[in-house]
Length: 358
Image 1 (cartoon, rainbow, N blue to C red):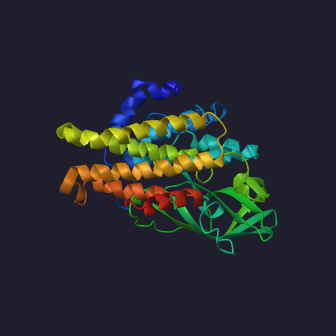
Image 2 (image 1 turned 180 degrees about the vertical axis):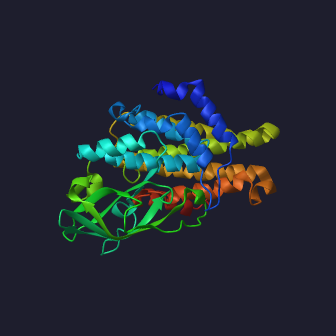
Image 3 (image 1 turned 135 degrees about the vertical axis):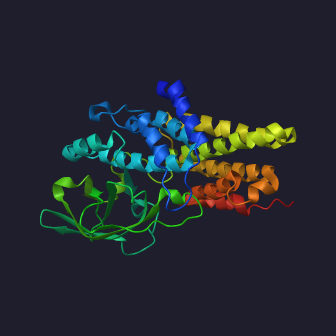
């Protein structure tokens, strides 16, 4: 299965090289401006938007390969791209042609950032009896109140694609301007890893959305409307596989100095190759949920184990704060919590709880 020609060009390989040579900001006050600028310079933001809106639409399989390759070079930046692309995808699958035309034309060049706040409609806080974002019908539209618990890059975003639930259980999605009255972006959280993604909550206080601006709904289970890659989609697996491959590239530098590490590096690299191949096969078909979940669980595991192996190979140096291996270990933990549906989480927990004793 051939990758898109754009991913095989010297131009794209130069982008990957530049990203690998840059250190992504780590602090919660940081933001990967330079990395995102490079993506825009190389037209990457246009690659998930159809030509009729000014883009260079990739197939879903090519988009997954893009995420995998970018994640091997710049994990935080790639994660932010997935959130921006998720927002664009929810806009693209809307039946609201007017909003679709206006928003995609604005977002396609890449100089405006958009993100999603939809975890409360998929995996986050679904155990609560009262929706975290409530919606009431008002004259000519809807009013949203509550707290969007997770939104990455909202501090930098022009638009937040989010939604909430009406009293009868129906839900809506809309592209909320972060400049709108009542949209309050909370300070981002200091996290174990990926803090520079500036992930945090967004408070919605009586935010009015005209009926003609709604992207999806009101319907039951709005996240099932159209495409867009829900929880546990192949996109998250692509990023995890890419992160693992990036860890292995850096681990290989240790192996060059210490050939005895080959015993451990080659099996991990073979496993990464098998997962990459499985990702490609699944992306060309219509995989069952169990296949998607199985790949995600194994991709999570590999991302964690390759980071741990790299740190172990560095000996004491990798345990010092600021070493890229210790950062990789912390960032690998992200895959245990990012859009991680219950079967995937249970699979990872089952692996962790398995005894190695006879």
